[in-house]
Image 1 (cartoon, rainbow, N blue to C red):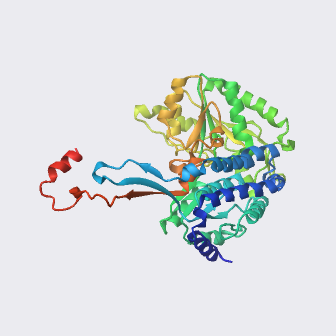
Image 2: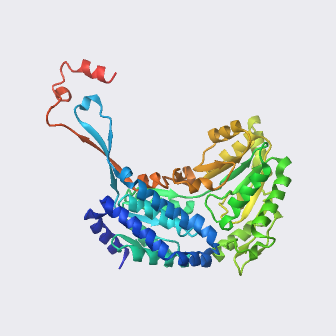
Image 3: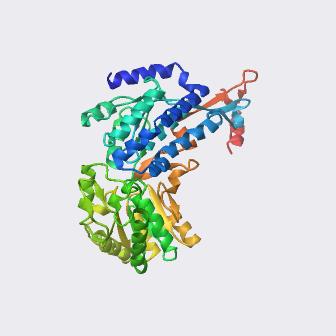
Length: 477
């Protein structure tokens, strides 16, 4: 069956109205959780094959988040889906106004390789809760997990309701998929591919959510708990071997704290993964050789202060810290002399222009908080921003004077784990958000409806308008 036939079948099924029924949606969420539970051990094994993920990491970052999302909707869906009455303007009296929540229709979900279970299933949960049909296109790089998702979806749903598109073709397959018209597209992946998705969607005026990435900074204040900062940055950076869209991509640190900070990074990296992370059961591998080769190319773009060793056969790259990256002195001096009306030309190292997506952490020195904020603001808006400080005023200043999709004060990553918070990017790091209520909103069209009474008809709105202008001016004063 080709992609057009699948879409047509799903549109026919959606048009029956069955997916809009709340009890149906709740039953489908229950079915999905049951199917995942039935194949939980296979999910563990699949993620071990694809990324060498330990079971604990799979549970906390993949399965657990999906279970929580399903449970959230099973508890709150009826309230979320209920039409909402809102205030009606006086000139529409005696009408009543409502917001109806309706699904878009057939949704295309395109997922990445780095959290290949959660980042396909979590959007699916939102799409189901909102009453849509869905097509899922997982990454071909995470083959074992994709096959596992296919098995789960086939067990839980008919293909006219939810279908996984086999993603093992090449660029031609993706081009064919994007040619078709969907009612909504939800994409998680790189900025470059996000632009391709948006261009394809624009041809049909299809609404999109783009969950992208970018270079998320971790900023160390001069007054902070440096040891805790290093521990939390090491965890946030090296979990999943750095293949996390909201991993700290570089660290800005005062010169007087740099050596001590790197020392703590070494201490906690060894505590987490032992003296040789390559043999640690808790340290994942790089997804494939293409990504591995890209990452190895970054290792020569600074001085290696920690790690730096790698093994191509095992797709292993050690937790690594780079200092004296080419961009550092030139960019910082450009920021520093800006107030004097000068400018500096400089070459930017690729490791500081591209999202790293691996266990390599550049550490950049800065002198003043103003300089650090200017450095962050000179780049594209990141998906996350992390600030470590003991000064509440400085925390509020950084939040006020920068922009990011989300982030943490004195921690990393943890904002993504809350289904009470919207998760998404801004500017170059994406558009739209999801998780919990925000997933429901993403996959729902809010339809404004006025219900007018037939008992009474206000003559004020009708011609002739003679002698009504004074009353209009009073209403719209």
